[in-house]
Length: 195
Image 1 (cartoon, rainbow, N blue to C red):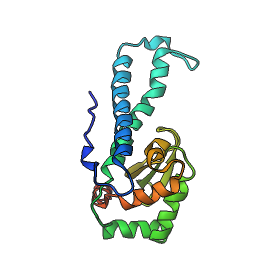
Image 2: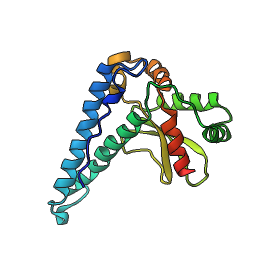
Image 3: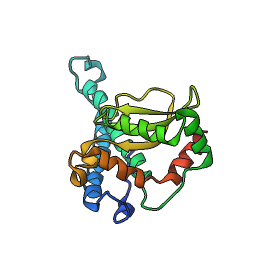
Image 4: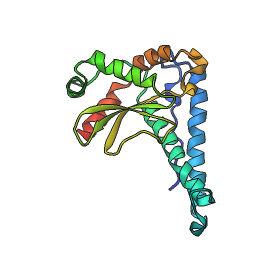
């Protein structure tokens, strides 16, 4: 399967507090993950699977990086898809699930922001298939930290590449801008799909 680069240029000129310059740099990084994923998958087809071990082996190294490239590509797609400059509202069903899981909207937002301060990587909001609740998890790199049985409904890129052009090291200001730009219609649809 060839992984395709999606066009998110429709976000240009639309977001509040996230500049076009920031977005274009970020798009380039995302495109690199998609290209690298295709390259890794192509190389895996021809590697000697008998020459693998933990210390080193070309197949082994490619397998170790496959998850990084895969999640690097698809977490970015989730992230860009859940951005919009248009005002949208949380559905009642999702609002109730958040309240059940976090007691209040304010506690949910505080949890996401605290999680963002705890990782250089990603924060994902999930519907947990085990307990049915909404959870937040932090990912170090792109592939470390996501428990099994999760459906991602919101992705927040916390890597510095997501905000350095606009905010320098002021991650808290970026988080405020992120919340201003969440496309709740997309998040609501993701939630409904896994509800």
